[in-house]
Length: 208
Image (cartoon, rainbow, N blue to C red):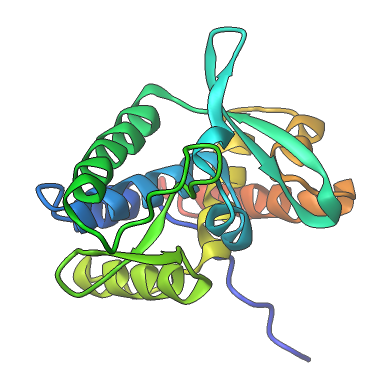
């Protein structure tokens, strides 16, 4: 019988560890920190993050949000907390300063600008928007630097987001919409994770 794959989600301590890795004094570090925090706080897919434009981070009823076009062209809107907004704005300010100084940086109008770009070895801008490979490399790099043994992938950050919501008692339908799942059966897989955690917590109790 095929062994069930271990659930991939990050604990609170693991999240803190990987968020400490980026050097937020540099443009690359600001980008990496903002990217990690955004993925963990919204559950966006890798393709969705790479495709984000600056105009997608906006406000709705005075609440900062990110507008996402996911699989099948389905649109969803996810709220952003203050820490994410601050991190993204900090990165964007540094990127804009770099754009003003470098001819390599994209200088098209704001309506067409991507939110995240790939960066050269010295932190210089490239014409290329953030790639899937760059996201994968970032996650491998912070995993290694944070001394985390488990695999960390874009699915791990989505899994972490969904599990955190369910742990806080958010209803399954709302989590489905926030994750952009077309079928609630897909979302139920994350509910099983929290059930396993509850069973494990009880099994660890020892009174004698």
